[in-house]
Structure formats: C-alpha cells, structure tokens
Amino acid sequence: MRQIQQAKRLSKHAFLKRMTKGSLPTDHALQELTERLHYYEKRYNMRSEVFYKLIVGTPAEDHPDFLSWAMCYRSYFRLLKTKFSLEEVLAGAF
Image (cartoon, rainbow, N blue to C red):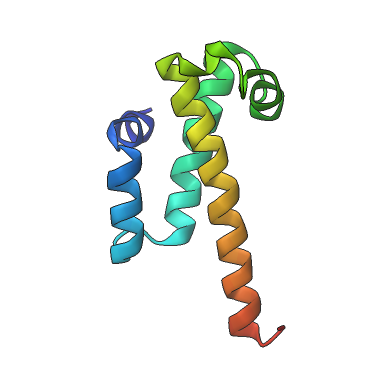
C-alpha cells in the first residue's frame, strides 16, 4: 500500500520527467502503474477496461479520481507499447 501512496503523489509531469531521465526503468514504471490500476479497481469495484469505456468523453471524466485513473490507464498502455517496440528493435525484429 505504501508504494501505491507514493505513486499516487507522482504527477503526470513528474512521471514523464523521471521516465525521460531514465531514473525510472520501464519495468518499474509498469509495476507502479499496475499497482495504481489495481488500487482504483478495488476502490470502485470495476475493471479498468470497463471504467475507461464508460467514462471517457463524459462529464464524470472531470472527477479528480476518474481523471487520474484514465491517465494511468492510458499511460500503462503507451508504456507497454513503447517497451515492446523497443525490445523488438533491440532483438532485431524490425
């Protein structure tokens, strides 16, 4: 739970800054995002995929928790895509 609280305090700007500086490895970042997603899923008793389909583009998206959850969900998939793209390049699978 302590890791979730620390990750919760990290703003999107701070997260991106740490990622670009290399101080937060991709695997660690994915772990933190996964923990945050699980936190929201437990809190609202809803899977992130369902939440995202229901909330995006609605006025409820402006709720601070929901906005943070949606940003976390998008960041998770963007980072996952980047990680696998990078691994494919390094493996020579262009």
